[in-house]
Image (cartoon, rainbow, N blue to C red; front, side, top):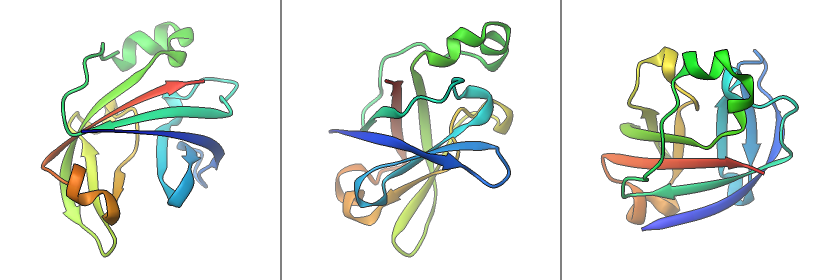
Length: 126
């Protein structure tokens, strides 16, 4: 099952660690500052899936050597970490230094379709 959302740039987080994108029903994605293109795109397209998404995973070292690659698609496999009051927290499966997005909080209304142990997210910059 796949869900598509268009999110608009909202702001940087207080510590300038993330660029925050937000859409309808407070659906948000935090993109690590090192992975966010400059200038920041006004919007992103997010694909959320319970099935693996086929795409190339770019390593942080490769992106830092070639900043133009920051505009390339982000694909992250997420692992279920904990249940919150109105959401489920997922973290990228990689080491913390290699995360391209921050923790992702799946809203409770999406839990029946996407609330498994693994979740896949794809982000395209528009």
